[in-house]
Length: 282
Ligand code: PAF
Image 1 (cartoon, rainbow, N blue to C red):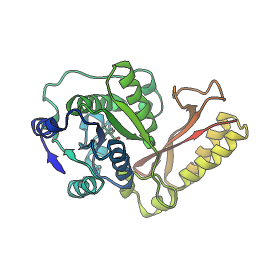
Image 2 (cartoon, rainbow, N blue to C red; image 1 turned 120 degrees about the horizontal axis):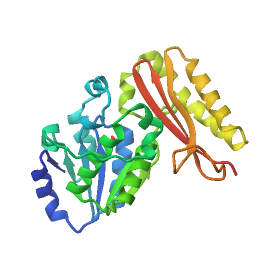
Image 3 (cartoon, rainbow, N blue to C red; image 1 turned 90 degrees about the vertical axis):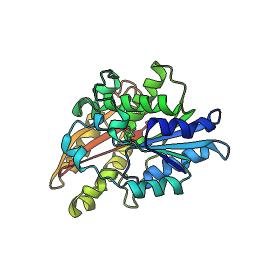
């Protein structure tokens, strides 16, 4: 595995690999088993002939909260080991200065899917994601890229960006990886208190119960209210949102025959957790 830190080093490492299937896995570091599964999926897509490029960049532009950026876990040595073990061929690990010009003045905004869910409570977040992912697509020029379904809205926005800007890359969604007790893996989980870590699997329990309720015809508003009530019964927990939306448009369900998505963001103390589940009725 080759580790690169500048755009020039990255371009030089990728030059002999051009023409092969190239699968990109963008990450912000603090890698866990969820990222490992993205890398393994990428390795499988690339096959023995192709190559896997992982990027590790804690993108400051997508953080709407300075405290969240400051406390975001950083484990660079462990991250490189995981990339190596999961079959990455090239890792790009730039500093912020190597990635962005100090006087950068171009922004990238998706205006429809970003207006709801996390986009509504984290202004500028998805513009930052689109900017960095677009830069990574330009630098790496992958044939494919893999993103996790835990960030379902991010995945939908990236698919939309690729479609609307004709970016020649195939996007793959990877299933959510969970701890044995059902908590979706997240780099932020390590910041939970012992009590909140013990209570956090309640999110998954609520999502599963909601799936049953929706399948048997419960009203969207009732499904959401029940999830909110269960989560807010946990001391120190406050829901940012609990929303049942169309899985493609991310806006209100208008046709219950289409795939729906129940998405949750909840504060467990000062740690914001997200999770989701696809729902259908037929
Ligand atoms: O999902 C993430 O870790 C980040 O949003 C991404 C896609 C790597 C962009 O910084």
